[in-house]
Image 1: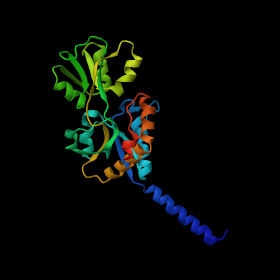
Image 2 (image 1 turned 90 degrees about the horizontal axis):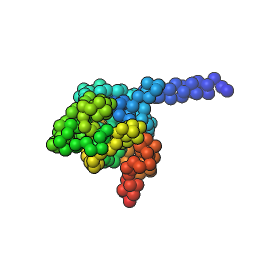
Image 3 (image 1 turned 120 degrees about the vertical axis):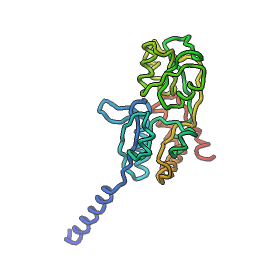
Image 4 (image 1 turned 90 degrees about the vertical axis):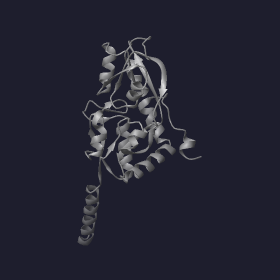
Length: 249
């Protein structure tokens, strides 16, 4: 091999390495406490549906994901303060939130919220209902005749029911399924309640990367990849996308 060829290969390798090193980093904000959407695994890493989807979105966009955890009650203020670049944290798309942040299209279809309790006859209309603070579920209970008991984390809402502080918990049914399945004293009560416009990725207003992520989400819906991930993490009974609608047919 000639010296000129060796030099050319070395320069090419250096350019490729430099390009990889210069790849844009996107800081992905999440809660890390809302399985199967997001949680911290035994290795201390962010895991779950949103971790896998977020990494896939970054890969297709030619970006490098860096995951950041943040408590739920300050998750939007820390996005607008640029402490990270996106939120993927089981966040439902609502008009109120859209006044502060920009959302991609949803990556979880509008799904049910549900009540769970240790008492099959729990009073859902006039009793005490636990919900996580700053959620669409908390807003729903606040507007009902029940007494709202808010907590900072999802685990605290479940504990409130188990220790008798609350008559029931109201949350995303996808979150409650595993808890009800694993606890023989807990069961679903009352009727499911459809809320929100599905779960989406939030970015600061005007961030051009929203269009990039939105386009990739459209592709993942149309080719069935998103449905596969939803079933993987939420089970065979999860609500998925109609592929004919997603592909525009």
